[in-house]
Image 1: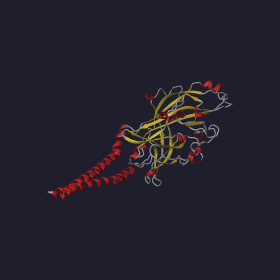
Image 2: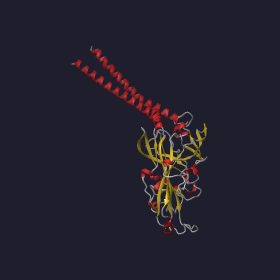
Image 3: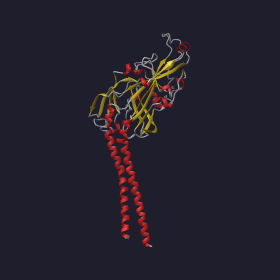
Image 4: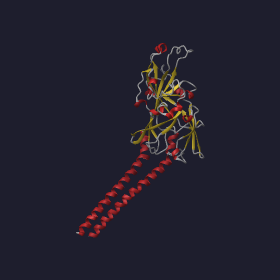
Length: 412
């Protein structure tokens, strides 16, 4: 009887040890299987999840505009007063609903080339007025439709998943010809996705043709998006800092007068890529700009929540599941003797014309599908690993304690 009981306790301990070992082994093996599956599915080639969503996004993307209306033009012309502005908006368009075109795979360089057709559909229900409002300085549907962005050539990740979606060339070049030195380089992806297994310490680099430069985002917070854990990466203030604050930005300062010898910050002169027009890009309401930029303008209220740019990236796949791209278009207005309205001005103004908010969020159906295909399976595997390991350890310890207790009683 004693032998049977001891044998049973030893058998229970052995079973517990086996379960614990199996749970322990499953951890690295499971991680390897997950990594292998992810690496296969994020490659930009026919048949993968990434390619299907890359060709045509299933996310509805909207671009909202707020127009700045000058309230005191005569005062400014006569007295060089502060410009009083009032924003009106939003005027909302649905964009990026067209599939990529002219998709060409190069098996030797492991790249994919394409152009992104532009299209815009006005959304009256999400707007404060119509496209015919007299103060509207831009009709996006007219300016945007029937145009394309590209040609882009990006790495497919077939031979090296750490390069997937990274831009190799834009319009056949690796440089923009707008900026001196390394500022002219085209870096990163187009921000729709990034190489997988994103860590909080990674700097996410991406190129935006809207602002004629490459830029970057840094980790800001962990967020739960429709049941999916994501990392929020934000555009830092240092990205538009002066060379005094951030020496890496020295090659983005291309003139000395308006920038006050490169000490002003928060605006970017993009005239070279806008056919020489005096266009400056900034964050909305001159968020993170130096006081001298916003001082001549009255009526601005910079707000981090409403005016900052962010990307919510699912860290395992590298997919961007939600984003908000916000920027402001400004025009340099300065004294000009040959122009009647400007000859009396006594100072320079960087005048806000409009700001835009382009947003996209994974839909409910897509989010549910993503949870089932990716995060759900990973969570289930993790749960099984923990249960096996925990139950095994508890069984092993409990049966061994019981066995030792029985042995000690027999000895007595």
